[in-house]
Amino acid sequence: MRQSSKLLGAAACALGFSLAGTNVWAAPTVEVLHWMTSGGQAKAMKSLKDDMESQGGKWIDTPVGGGSSEEALTKLRARVLGGDAPSSVQLKGPLIQEWGALGVLQPIDDVAAAGKWEQALPKSVAATMKYKGQWVAAPVNVHRLDWMYANPAVLKKVGITMPTTWEQFDTAAAKLKAAGITPLAHGGQAWQDASLWEVIVISVGGPAFHQKALVELDPKALGGETMQKVFDRMRKLRGYVDPNFSGRDWNLATAMIMNGTAGFQIMGDWVKGDMSAAGKQAGKDYLCANPPGTDNAFLFIVDSFAMFKSKDPDRLAGQKLFAKLLMEPRFQENFNLAKGSIPVRTDMKLDKFDSCALAASDHMAKTVKSGGFAPSAIHDMAVPMAVKGAMTDVVTKHFNSDMSSAEAAKRLADAVKLARE
Image 1: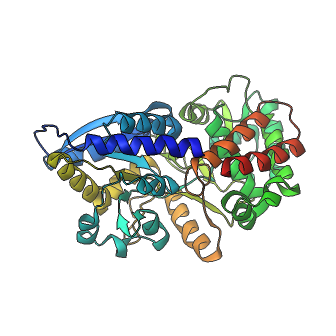
Image 2: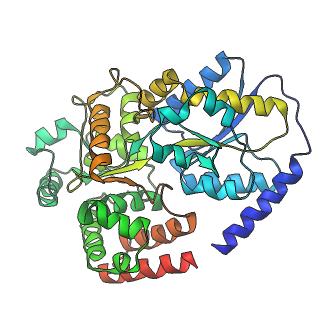
Image 3: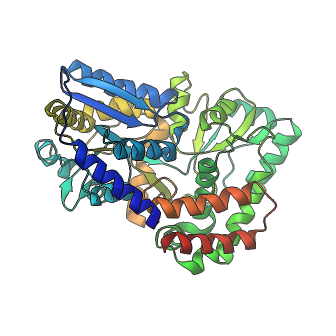
């Protein structure tokens, strides 16, 4: 963690030196570094680009493929170290605070005040968009990580329904296997393994255990009996993926649901964005449901864009225009319809959204009241990058080896402790 801080500190110094120079742009300009590159995500980003250009702005797209925030952050550090920070970067949760502490983020209080953001956003979301009371980022949506998807035609063919318990899931998986269908569509990438694991954490242990283990980072919770049961379930799920899962992007796993070669996928609601982009309809071509054990849980992820300092007047103007557009109701509607998420604004009608989005909205309201509305640790909403990385390393090693659940839980507690030092 100290190594990371040193690198970020050097990056901040480099950016400070770079601010003396300016570039010549023909219009309010924004360069956006992001990892929204799959079908639904790309469609959502295009709606933003179109809005920017329709108002006279210039858009410079800097995408990072594969849905990897880690790769994007590596690229960001290199850019800042080189004194060439992008105008805006897709950042979430604690990362906004980490970059804010380095003094490299650009305040946008005037934009937020003019748009009355404080009144339009949940308090918990608004707080994460600020650094020391100043707005430095704009949110665009709320994703739910703990979703389960299925192809209804496949379920009907095999004679099963959407499972509501893990015992029912295991029974359904056995029938799918017998029919030559992969029970669980999954991509063998570390972040996907960890995403699935976090869903199992809140499923097996409940929201209070998730808070204790993955937010408060309590050593006893991380290394204890409940966490061992989490890894037991992960071992069971490992037996339901196909032999060719290694390295598969998440959207290719989603394609397995769409084309009927897999039964279920457990992943965030960006899955729905890709299905919609492919012309599929919720309730007809695909089903969405709470994974077993998550009826009282909502693992939330808020996508947001932070603004990085510049002395170039056109880039500063571009940031203001960009930030303004991000929070406009029309954009929030278009973006979230394309991406599969729901608007982060609390003052919007959802009459154009499908049944899955409406269910997500209702479930969010329910879990906010009950205490089950939980920030995703694996998707940068709760813990520092070093801690997330430590968790991910242990999870993916367990998932891809014969490591015991007891050993995995012990390694998890030890790795998190080391990452926090």
